[in-house]
Image 1 (cartoon, rainbow, N blue to C red):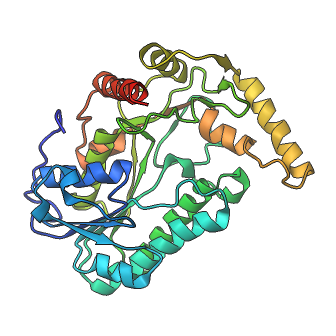
Image 2 (cartoon, rainbow, N blue to C red):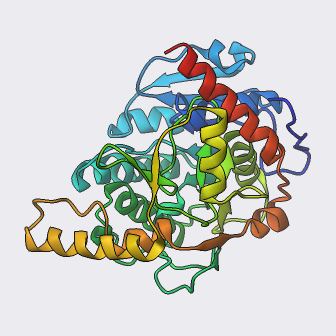
Amino acid sequence: MNSMQHIDLHGSLVGPDDLILVTGAGGFIGSRLVARLLDLGFRRVRCLARQPLDPARFNGDAAHVEVVQGNLLSPDDCAAAARGAAVIFHLAAGRGEKSYPDAFLNSVVTTRNLLDAALAQGALRRFVNVSSFAVYSNVGKPRRGVLDESCPVEQRPELRGDAYSFAKVKQDELVAEYGRKHGLPYVIVRPGYVYGPGRDGITGRVGMSPFGIFMHLGGSNTIPFTFVDNCVEAMIRAGITKGVDGHVFNVVDDDLPSSRGFLRQYKRHVRPFRSIYVPHAACYALCRVWEWYSDWSEGQLPPLFNRRSWHAYWKSTRYSNDKIKAQLGWTQPVPTAEAFDRYFRSCREKRAHA
C-alpha cells in the first residue's frame, strides 16, 4: 500500500504481539485491512472466513497470519475465533440479502454470537464494529446540511424497504447495548461509499438502472466516497487509539466530488453510456408515488424507491470527517485525485479482460 502513512504503535491500545481478529477477512475491505495490519508490524493476525483463505494473499509473512474457517452463526466457531483476541475488527455482514430475516440473521445474530464469545474470553480491549452510512435517517435535516456523527439514525428502519439498512441499524443498537450492559469496549465505524480496485460498480447514490437505462439521481449532490486504503487506515486507528470507547466515527475522504462530476469522470475514463438525469423534485415525486403504489398493492411492487430512501441517499447533503481527524489523528493517506486514477484504471483493466 504505497502512499500510506506510518502509524506509531508506541502508546497504542495494543502492541505488535497482541492478537487481532478480523472477520470478513476475505472481502474487499477485510483483505486490505489484514494486509495493512501486517504492513504496520502486527505479528498475530487471525482471519475468520467462511471459505478457505491462502495467507499469502495478504502480501505479508504467512507465519503472522492464522486463518480460521468458520461461520459466525456457530457459537463454537465464534469461541474459537475470539480466543485470546485483544482487538476485533468485525467486518462480516449480510450484504446482498433481500429478506429482512436473512439480513438480521447474518448481521445481528452473528454479531451477538461474536460479542458473547469475546466477552467470555476476557481478553478483549476493543471491538470495532464496521457499520455504514446507510443507518442515518437524514429526514429532518435541511438541504445541504452537514451529516456527521451527531445525526440521528433511522428509528423505523423497516420502513425504508432496505434489508441491509435495517440489519445495520439493529447491529449498531446491539453493540451499544452490550457496551451499556456488559461494559463492552467498543467503537463503531461508519464508512461512506467505499470504492477502489476490485469494486467497479457505481453507487446507487449516483443512480441506478431499474428500467434498463441509467437514471442519474444524484445531480449536484456530494457523494460520501472513501477510498478503500483511506478507510482501512481510519478503521485501524479506531481499533488502537486509546480513550475512544463508545464513540462513533464516520469515514469520508476530503475533496468529495459531486454525483454529476463523478459520473462525468467515469464516462470519460472507463466507458461512455447513456444516462438520464432525474431532477431532485421529480425523484422525490417518483419515490412518493412508488411508495404509495407499494402500499396500495400490498407489497406486490417492493418499495425500492420511497421518501426515506430519498432523504438518505439522494437529498443534497454535505459530509464531515472532522471527528476522525481530531480524535484519531487520521489524515487522508491517498489523495482523492490519485485514488480515482487507481480506481478508473482498475475498472478499465477489468473491462479489457472481461
